[in-house]
Length: 306
Image (cartoon, rainbow, N blue to C red; front, top):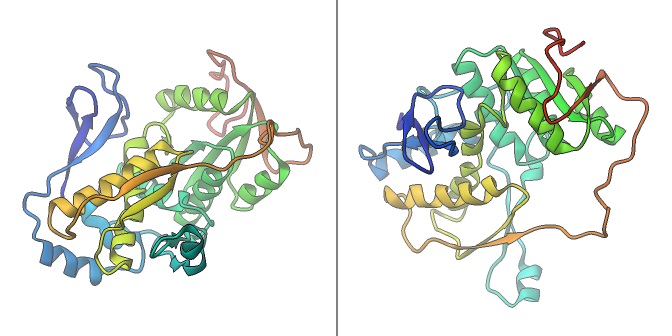
């Protein structure tokens, strides 16, 4: 495998491939580093084409010491040609990547599958996350399939429908008083105190790598061609940048030729306050936990209770 280390994006300091996400020297974010110098494009292409029907066919470009296995394997979602939209926009071709075809119906299955496989490789037996929706579903589902315990931390006023969609997988839902920033702050502190794999905290460098598979699949589904332009949601900045990195990696080893595509960021619009969440009462396995700038959570037992 080509993975070599974790490397700081700011100062370049390298660290072992462990559960870490911030540089001790400059506090910059860590990302996974690879060495593709020994790769031959023809051999890599054969391995990809002989691989599984999901994201593990791209294991050479993912952060593992050996080819991973998973009870749930997302990926190879449809790339749909949208001719009427192309005509309306006045362009030759438009293709839409339909990641709703993933197991829990969002691209989060990709990043969670990578993070959970890395968590197992590192010896974790519990995974967790901070979320308000799709990530919660993916973590709960993938953990259940792997047979390991999971905790999902959400704002306490999250819609009941979202909680039900996550709770059906048997996870432990923890309601936190506050907004998503409060939830994320609490999870960051818990990650330093408990032996859990928080997919979007201490495993974030590996988690983010799953987004590259969207680039790989698009190239393969276009007949090993780069697209001219990419329109990508920017709710997750990591999704935007990692798709670009995926194209760059394949071009660097000769799997694909041509100029890198132009990227456009996109986001849904809505009326002011459209994302406000109203409190609900009946919520599956939800536990309340107050989040403050320095949350008091030392009194929790191993299952997240006071």
